[in-house]
Length: 140
Image (cartoon, rainbow, N blue to C red; front, side, top):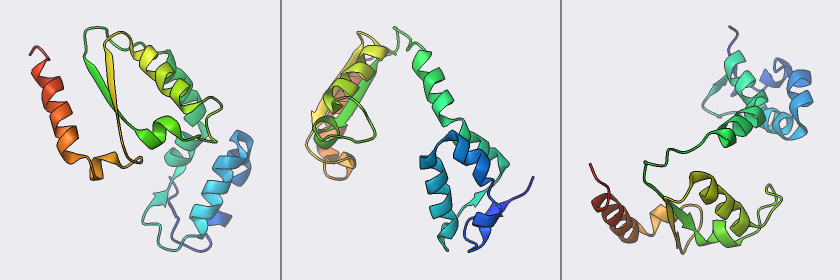
């Protein structure tokens, strides 16, 4: 297995660009950008490249799985994630989140907290309360 150090300025020459390009321009652009970064701090190998190529298939497979009805579920959603348009998603963010919860099933509970994707940085107390309430209701 050949290891490609992304930290190298010349590693982009060794990346299988054509194979990645076939799977989508987005991933190709990400790989080329990563290859130009001098201090990325990680390496690319054949396994990593294969995982990148198969991401769409993995997501489709995961979406086909059913969440066990007997397993409690709680999702904390940031208000920004719930309300702000995401150009990577073709539907409204609220609809996307509701579809995700529907895939989980009737046991899916959620709460929207003010903040960005990094809501855990400024909502420590409320997240602790949510977790405590949720876990106290779970039968061991």
